[in-house]
Each structure stands twice: as C-alpha cells, then as structure tokens.
Length: 387
Image (cartoon, rainbow, N blue to C red; front, side, top):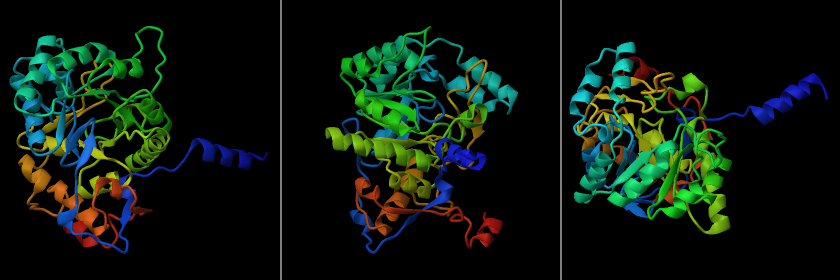
C-alpha cells in the first residue's frame, strides 16, 4: 500500500463529510398541496401534539408557566428538574440577577452562584403538580446521574414524560466510580415513557431504542447558548446527524414494528431550518433560543446553556436574545419581518405544501440537495441592505 492510498483510506474511514442546515436545500417535485390540508401533528411518548415544537429544558426558556402555554398552543415544553425552579421556591430574583450581570466573567460567576443551592425534592413535586393541575403535559428532564432518584419523584407526582438528557448519550457508559444508569432497567421500572438525548450516532440511537427509549433527541453542541463544540471539539452538523439517527429508527421499526420518534434538538433559528430538520427525518424539533425570545419566557431576553454552572469547565454561555415577541407570534404569526424567525408553524406548513406533502411522515421522503450557496445565491442586495 502506498502512502497516498493509506492517507486516502484513513480519510474515507475516519473523516467523512457532514452537513448542516445552511448547506442543504429541499427540492420541490411535480406535486404541491393545499396548505390548509397540511397536518403538522406528531406523536411523542404516547401524546399527540398539534405542532411538532418542543421548548428546550433550559431555565431561560421553560418554567412551569411556559410549559402550560406551550401545551395550550399544541406543543410541549420540558422543564429541567436540576434547574433553578427546583432549587428556589421563587427564582424570579435569581433570574433578574443573571439577566442584570455584566457580560463575560461576571455573568459566569453569577450563573455559578445561582446553581449552588441544592435541588429540593419537594419543589420537584410541587412543579409537576402545578403543571398537571392546569391540564398541561408535564414533561421533565434530568441528567443520567440523577435519573433514578428523579424518575421516582416525577412518577409519583404524575409526570407524563421523562427525558434523560446529557451532553452525549450512549447505550453503554464506562465507569468504575459511579452507578451506571441502565436505560433498560429505568424504562422497565417506570409507568411513563422515557426519552433519551442527545446523540448524533445511528448505532447509539439503535441501541437506545433496543433498551426501550420512547424517543431519541439528536444534537451535540449546536445550540446558540452551547459551547460544547468549542470547548470539547465534539459534534456533528444537524442534517447529517438527523439523517443517520432517522435511518436507525426506520431500521428498528422494520425489525420490531415499533416506531421511535426522533427529535432534532438545537441549531435551528428559522422556519427553513425547521423544515430541513423534518425533511432529514425528525418527527419534532426542540428549540431553545428561539423560544427564549418569547415575552412569556422566564429569561428576561437572555438564554444560557445548562452546562454553564460547572465550576471547573463551563460548557454554556449566556447570550442576549435580540427581538422579543409574544410566543403566539413566534409560533403562528403574523410575521412582521422576512428573517424567517416568526410564524414558525406557518413556515413549516407552507414548506410542506410547496413540497407536495401533507404529514410529517411524508416530509421525511422529500428530495434534498447539497447546496452551500443556497443562502447567498442572488441575495447580495439583501445581505448588504437587510434591516
């Protein structure tokens, strides 16, 4: 084997091309559909959602009240059981301090201090009870280290969905110092669906499905307030990651007859991004910063990564959200700009209609092309003079 061929073989096996939202485009076919006949409904964990939008389990995005609002709009919000709302009876003043902190190191210190208070079991129960009392879906999130304890609390309080979310999720975890979370044991012992995130690997997703996961969340580090890719160098662009995990889902369904929904989590800002995520195989999308811009969101116009409180290696940052609008306008319009960040449900509906599909599942089969110039082709005047 020559040196040249050896390099080429290594490139083909260890280094492959991957694509993000800005590098692909959706291709219209010979058929279009009436937008009024497009059904944006999707199923997740046994619940039927009218729109495929989930609010991220981030303290600046989803508290109990926001979860109720999202549920009433036909979507869903996950509330973090390790966040501020389970550490303080009233987190209002804490959030105000975070929002008022100067940028940079000062904000990081304020965030770290905010999360020093211990999590209180009673507040977890009260949070879930309050959401359920208002007729909303009680969807909660925790990390693997706390999953066993929080799962029992959540189940007792009547939670509907339980998301075990970590920086990178895998079916096996190597450790000699801590109790290893067995997803199969967790799913088998609970009376509520267990969802798992996050992964970018089809093989890992397939194994998680085998262990009973009721949904798989895709995405490592694409969020606007996440710095995992910069700090740790880990991640795969969302289009390629979603395609791979969706392929594993389809394979698993063929072999078992059980369909496991895939959720693209993070990296989306516009209706076009969301349409591309659904076309890549997602059954729903999870949004953080776009919803942090809602007037009803608790973050006061800011968002921050939930790994930020780490005292030794923070992997999140506080960002300022620009435009703030009512949640209803973000979801359903009317859109007052051409940036694609308003009326997200309407944009998805129009995209599906133009592509000739009427359901989320049908959207998975539309044609896509690699198109790195799709955002700039013929747009020089827009890019130079956009207001």
